[in-house]
Image 1 (cartoon, rainbow, N blue to C red):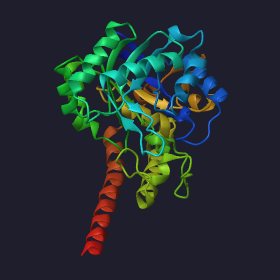
Image 2 (image 1 turned 90 degrees about the horizontal axis):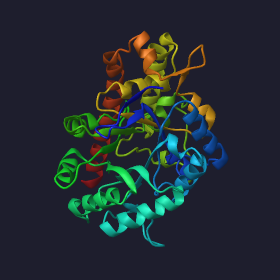
Image 3 (image 1 turned 135 degrees about the vertical axis):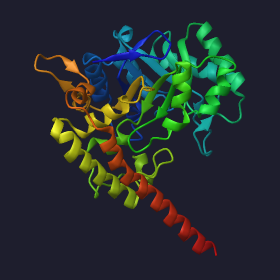
Length: 350
C-alpha cells in the first residue's frame, strides 16, 4: 500500500481508504455485519489505515460495526467520523442538518460511545447547515480538539467559498467531497482552495457509487426500498437515470476494453488510479461489504506484497486524455437529458 501526506496534519494516510456508508445496511442493500467486520479486517491487513464512518450511516449502526472491527486494532487506524446530521422526529422528513455547538458536542460524545474509543483522528461536519453560522460550528470543533476528543477537524460537502469562510475562524484540516470519473465538479469547486491551504482531501464515491466497478449492464435495476441509486441521481448527478445509465454503462465497457484490459487491470483499478492522479487527493474512499470486494481493489504481487493500482499505471501509463475523451460521451448524455426534460417541462407548462 502507498501512503500520502494527509494535508498538513503530519499524518500519512493510505491512498485507498475504507468507506463505511454501505454498512448502514439501508443504502446499498442488505449487508451482514460479520462480513462487514471481516471486510474491514481484510482492508487493514492489506495496508489500509483510514476508516471513514458517520452517525448518519444507519442511525449509528455503521459506527457500531466499525467498533467491533477495530477492537484491539484501534491503534492501526486513522478513524474518521462526522457530525451535523441527525435523525428527525417521527413523522418529519429528514435527515436534519444541525451544526450548532450543542449538537456538535452531543454528537461527538455519542459517536465516541458507539465507536468505543476516547478519540477520533478526524471529525468532519457532514453537510453545511444554513441555520448555523460557520463561526459557531468552527469554534465548537476547536473545543472538540482542545478536549482531546478529535485530533483534527474538517468539513464534508462544503463549497470552496464555504471553506474559505470557515477558515476565517479556524483552520480546516480535511475536506471530504464526492469525486469520480462521472463527477468532476470539485476540480473547479474546492481542489484549488485545498491545494493552496494544504487541506487533506478525501474523495468519496471513487468507483462512481458502483458504476465504475464494471458489474452493471444496461439491464441492471435497483431496489427502490433498499438502494438509493434507484432514484437515478447520485449527489445531483443523474448518472443512474434511464438513458444516462445506459450511456454510462457503455462508457465503462469501453474503459474496460480500451484501457483496463490492455494493462491487465480491472475497471475499478483504473477508476482508482484516475482519482489518485489528481494532486489534491490524499485518499480515495472505497466501500466494501465483503473481503472479496476489498481484494478486488488491490493488486497482489508475486511475492505476496501489496501495491495499489497506481503502480499498474506507472508500468503502463494511463492516458488521462484518452479517458477524458471517453468521459465526454457521458457528459454530453447528461446535458442532453437535462435539455430534453426542460423542453418537456416547458411544453407542459405552456
